[in-house]
Length: 264
Image (tube, rainbow, N blue to C red; front, side, top):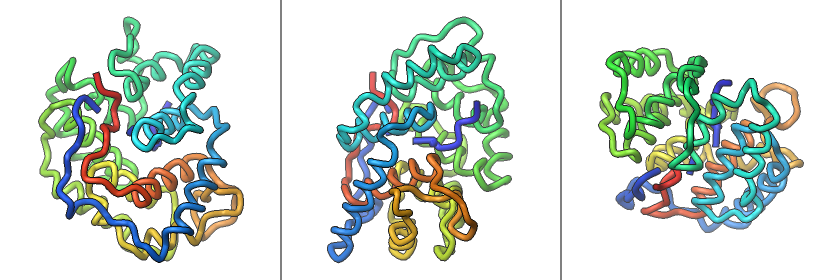
């Protein structure tokens, strides 16, 4: 099961304290539309049973106090119990929401998705360290761009929150991720992921005002977002999780958010 996030997603052991320049201030002229957009997206997602979405909803519950998402972890555990074939990887990723999450023998060896292999070592780096090949894996993934790059950014967030040293220059990761959203005409799932993860990393100032306005403008009537705004289709849960994560950070600017990962 690939964690594309994700959501994929406050999707850690200490709070992040960020200088004011790194957080994007809310814009007064847009406040009402922004609040309506977040409310509609919350309504769209509050009944989901998509497991990767549920982990990110739990992050939003812990970070922003979204009451509609208070049962996200309970639903995640229900889905895990009903899908034994997926349970090993789901148990591994459950540490996003539960710091002392119990694993069964062999669970980590069941992780095989390319994107999961980028982020899972970061998720457990405070317990297991990271493998010798991990820096090369991260560099290769970052060079591949797209979702590989955004997951390198996610890994950097988790490693910092877990108190581990990230083995790459962070500025390179931030700037490359920001380049993914340089054009705000078309809004798609990848751009939403890049923007949401930049905010999770405390780099919201790299997301342009025009991009945020375009995200609000292209929200569907049902409260969701499509995989891509330049192609027909229904609202997609993954894009909507990311769009909501982005807009909640814009609506609630702060220099000290709770961690993405559940604290000890």
